[in-house]
Structure formats: C-alpha cells, structure tokens
Image (cartoon, rainbow, N blue to C red; front, side, top):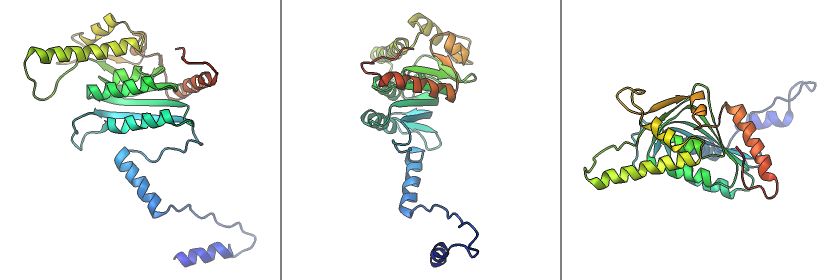
Length: 258
C-alpha cells in the first residue's frame, strides 16, 4: 500500500487535464502518541504555537483537586497542572494575555487560592469567563483576573468553608477554619467591587439553598452585587482581553482600568 501511494503521488492523475488529488496529512506514529498522551494527562491536545496565537486559554472545570487525589469518576482540574502552565505563560514573551474559562463546582481551598494568587500576580492581562458555574473556591479564581465575565445563565454559589473527613474537635481546628475563611473573604473583596459586609451576608444567608446555608447568584445578580464585572460570552471576553493587551503594549503602562 505504501509503494502504491508513492507511485500515484509521483505520476499524478491518469488524465493530464485533471488536478492532482490532495493527499491527507499523515502524522507520524510518534506525534500521534504524543497527542494521545497529552489528552490523557492534561485533558487537551497540544496548545497552538506561540507564533499563531498570542492568547493562552486556561480551562478550569469540574472539581479542583488539591493535596488529596479524587476518585477517577470525578472530573477534576489538578493544580499541579495549572501552576506550571502559569509559570510558562509568565516566561513566554510571545503570550500577551490569558483567558481563564471556569465551569467548576469548587474543591480544595488551598489549591484554589494558589491558582487565584498565581493568576492575580501575572504581569500580563487576564480575563475570566464563568460558564455554567463558578462555585465555592471558584469564586476567588473568577475575580482574580483584571476583568471578569459571566454568562447570563451561569451561577456562582457563595457559602462558608466546609471540612470533609475526620475533624479534631478542638478550639485550634475551628480557629484555623475561621482564618482560612477570612483569607477567602479578604481575597474576593480586594479583587472585586463587592464589600466585605455584603459578601459575608451572602455567605451566611439562610433559606436560599436546601439543607444548606449560602447564596446562589445567577448571571446579572453576580454583576449587580459587584462580584463580577460584566455579563457576556466568549466574544465579549476576547474583545476585552485584546483591549487590555493593547493597553499593556504602551510603554509605562502597569495597571488595567476596569
């Protein structure tokens, strides 16, 4: 079969007036194996070459996995995958902006805060887009960027921190939980327009969730509360990111007005 392919390619079509048939682009077995390994380990194919695209898309979906490995049936975003990407983005001069897309139920608090801190500390423009949901510890990640969007039907759940597994019932444990919760509140209020009083009121509100306490914000509600900047989709998010990239190209520009 391989010899037949080569002969046909060399002699061309039987009728000289016909155009040669376009042959399919064949990937080498090694390249195919690398693509499959990338899908299995990272959940995505190889990213476009930096010369083709100056925007890096960061996907955060499912449950954010931290120090404990979650069951295989869970859709997870592993923080040990995200953090190296953010370091590489900061070092790559060809990448000028980051679009973070979220559809997450939350997860490990420390892992989520680590991702949020990394996004916030990037020297390049960043925009977030909440699709479906940006719940729990996904809230700090959503507000960590220079500008944030939420889809009209997307939701965000704000609730107090919860502990899973065995808990040692001593005052130190509750003090640690309180300090961890204060870290989340401080980060969210410092990187959004919502006040600490309003955020705490949403966090401890009763009656909005069945058998739980907290608040669910849908699209425009998240914007009116000051948590998210604007309701919009992928087109609006990319347009805003391109505007921030243009501002960042100007000499002496260090901040991005919201």
